[in-house]
Image (cartoon, rainbow, N blue to C red; front, top):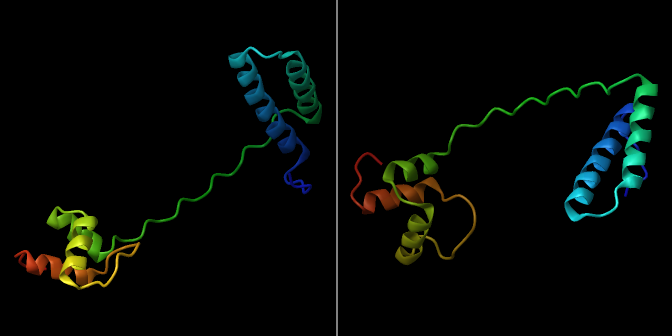
Length: 121
């Protein structure tokens, strides 16, 4: 565990309280003794009340805007095939020399479409 503390004291107490709550749920499911955990939860609740109540709500993060889909992904969806089909064809046709991870280049998908008689690709 890190020795660096982040957040205000009340935020740290709230985080500790949620961890104790999880441990209490686990103890209840497994039938383990819960007295010490209940005592600890009571102490934490008392500390939170003495610090001024509930911790302030966290500010929500902004969702990143999705980028536009790649041309190869659009073509694969239009063709109704999987990228594994296109990759296997390209490997057998000698267009790519080895199996690789990641997105297929659009030129490979276009070559697949042209070879299989798809117009406008």
